Length: 89
Length: 433
Image 1 (cartoon, each protein chain N blue to C red):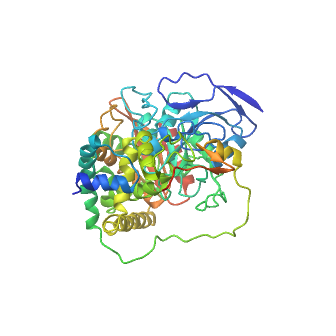
Image 2: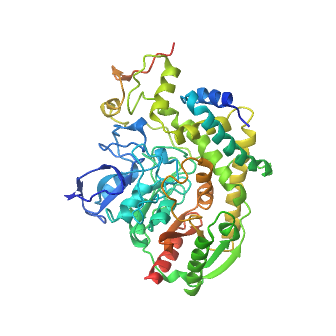
Image 3: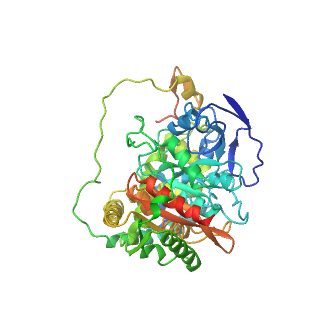
């Protein structure tokens, strides 16, 4: 079981804004879903590692990238070919 | 070179963006109007993923599949409605309002590629591109009475597909009949260096109904188990009987890993979503951050305002499933269960050529029926997620109706054997005419 304060904490970790008015609803749904996920407790560990897939590598060759204008067009603010982000500190 | 005037009236809210005049070139699809799900990037055409967080975003490039359909001469006539970021089974979580089912407008079209399915089922377009992470092509195909193919993982490039759950999702064709699905698939399949998971297996097949004779079709008991509407089960059993009449050999079998497949799927897709969707923060694309507050506060405010509840729920579930102390309980176990699904398929495919069952456990839900209870909506994906977990191809082909609503027959094949499930679907479709 997770509590409303657990859900509020997860929302902060995930940078998902969550309102006090939404907490009860999200927490109830969370618990119903997590209870269903408990099924996985019955899955036995096989001890086999990995995903069964293999990495495919290629040479790191320089290729054309997207046009700067087209990319910056979608950004909120840009300056000298860079995108401006909110202040960190 | 020419252009298509696309004046179809959209009474189903199937499209988010309509291109009333669309240019086209020469090729095997010359002048054919093709609708593209709005999670696939189109240069110069808004691509929203059904979300407010990307409203107004105009990609500076085409997805690989869009380059290919254009090169084949098709006219891209619009971008179709969908559950926000593909997260849903009904197309009701779109920020642009729900799409309705052309067969019965009080019903959902299924999801998440509901707009593409409705655009085809209503006759607005002959074919469309959808994407399938846990059934998002096959579910709406079944609910709307059309054909939809989820290809082998990697056979169609994901370059330009906005990522939600990379290890599960893929792009595939949807159309009114098997032949058109096959035509569109032949255009989009093949290698692409820009997708590291791409495989070099082009598709040049012409569907044939001849291969059904002697085909061994496995029917796992779990596809007719708890939660499957008895009337749907009966309809699909009858369709499998029709395949037997055409000369296929029916083999009853079992897939025990199905018991954990849905939980494994939801843990995996929410975990991947929690990482993938971190990029939607109002800085690089979509509506801008207006807040002058600091980094995290500004992001939280922006994402609360611009992401719907289902998307926020899945991001949080995935964040939780990957967090320290819970990783072993959820994510690691889900990967174990996922391996078991792959092994079950490998074991069955050593004996049978194709696996058959219903696409969906029920017919289309009423609008609003499942929106308040996410878990009940998740459970509807139980029959489609196994193919995504294993990366194998699966097709949904219409097999009649229950109470006037379409039912889909799902045919699942071995890796890169789309040709065989398309032939089986073709034989079934031909026999119904």
